[in-house]
Image (cartoon, rainbow, N blue to C red):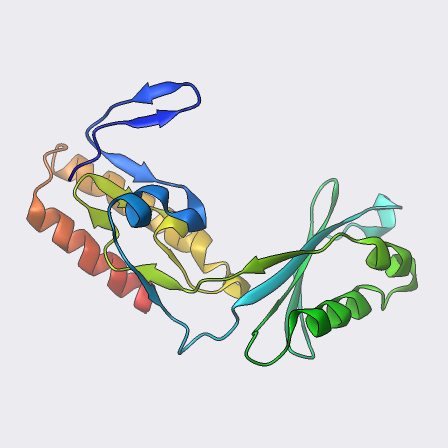
Length: 200
């Protein structure tokens, strides 16, 4: 029941411990080790997002040094100025608005500035299905889930950035403290404390 090797594009990798960093797919932790997904859906209803990149026309006047989050009709829009383009998206709940209406709301919001009207119409929007929740166990046998492969709360506060950093730090400290000799008690403690952290 342990992972003995992983086959990738560059060959076969064998090790004692595997850290699953495969994002929402959770290839090792959920798919291979069977750590089931526990949804936060009853508490968090934002389960959908539309995302796009808007190219700069006049970078000097359009780039900003902050991320903005703006509430609109059925959710909120993020606006992240990247070096080469603007990353933006609309987070909403499919319980309250359909995708087509949400896209109209999003494009209308993007076009509120006349400089962006044409780009808002031409923007290629992709749909993202959000799964809020946590895997039942973040560490199963010799697989540890870190980041999105383990849990995701809500994008507004970038909780996954903080939790990813925290879990990496906890893993390194545990391995160092136990001199890489991990037992079932250590794994149970990891699972308990990690879940408590995410739930809080």
